[in-house]
Image (cartoon, rainbow, N blue to C red; front, side, top):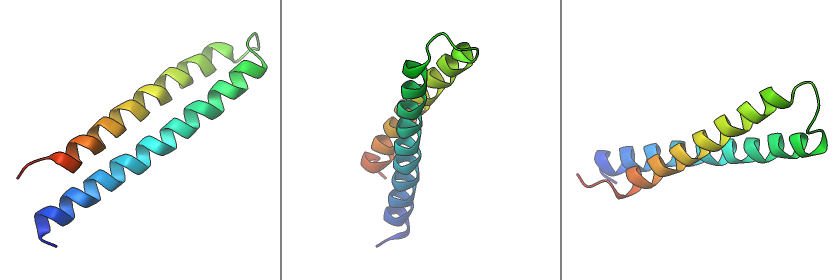
Length: 71
């Protein structure tokens, strides 16, 4: 495995793991928000849901880009 290939693999792995964790976090926040949509923290939870979803999409897009990046 060359250094470039190893670097690409590490980058893609880190972004993919981060994206998966953010996606699971978004699901967790969404389930809490569904249980109590009118609670005192609903606005903060909605903001956290949007942030986690955006982070998951960004990280997974970066992982895909790092996996197919040409030298």
